[in-house]
Length: 527
Image (cartoon, rainbow, N blue to C red; front, side, top):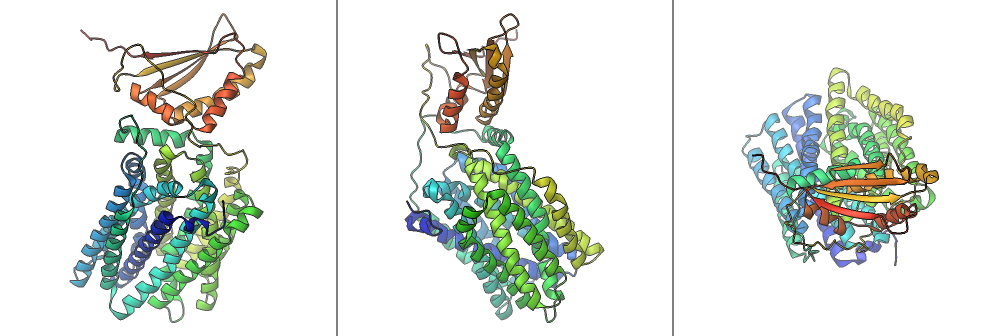
């Protein structure tokens, strides 16, 4: 099967939703450009201008995990559709207020925040949908195409917004944004998604949030990805947040200059995205992230002190190339570290780290620009990123063999002597192993991995005990919240879990397999 950069577009459903994603992100950029430029006409405060980025990104940080949980437990098609109509509604309200001259800096930030809520709810569900639409071998290319859509929209959106602002005014950018968002919602309605039907009842909202957070907490690979994406956006967001002021400060700068700089960044990202397949074949992910971070920091310094657009535009072009290289590399690493059952929750936490860092960055560097100057703030952002890079390099996103997270039906649910209510519990599971004492150290290392695996699947607690009188007898125990949560384990089994079980059993030397017991908590009358 082809794994070329454009191969995923041969899948009809992916192609339809990719075009929808392109339109949706074009709307997002139109809205952000119009809001950022409108703010420069309402106030001269660099902090308020930079807070437009914060207001747009903060909802993703606040609502990322709840939206990811909803995307995992609800119908993803309907959820995706609702988010589109939310964004359209916010655009209608915004354009009405602008047309009637009722807008103010504070109200614009509130509406930008409301629009960000729609983005916060939309991104995790689309991130979870993509692996459903393409074969695994095409997933990196599909994610790169998403990057192309994002950055093509970075060109199309600002160009459209700039032309409309110049000809008609900012309000009509929001009008077009609303119309395109509604159209995108109706396209999503045409998608006939095949749902995977489970015999088990759906996960509860709060329980889904707990398990999603716990999965990421126990994944060492996700730890590295989250740290690297947060540090990169702490460094890289400064140039986007302060770009309207950079544009105004250039010779002859105005709305057209701002649009040109954004479009240059988008062009660079599109060019780099089309070459990512070759870059991945030549360099490992850590090298791409490290070198991309260095290039982006260097371009930020050039933009900070650019005397004119002839210097600033090429710098933004190469900044876009570095940005998509780092962001796509880390996104692919996150996707490959998550099984499908928790993908939306995991990617929502990834997006929380990204947007939370970006929102903090916009507020921080906006404040620095207010106290000092825009060039000084951009220089400080670049220097901070480079100062943290040697420390960040210790958190590798590649090195060990990647876990095979393909779903497996190797384990069958237990048969019980009597029916058990789904909500009965907690459930105590114990497994007894007979181990050669000479192999105890190696066995404990495998059990460390088993602990992370059990907890990633939702266990409330896990421990390993050694018998005080028999040094070769070990008991593993873990607790699940309820019987139905215990049964979910058998739906969540991956090829990596099966392999880990085989490694555990390789240490067992008893004549019989390890003894497994399952016990349900017995409710007692307190009286």
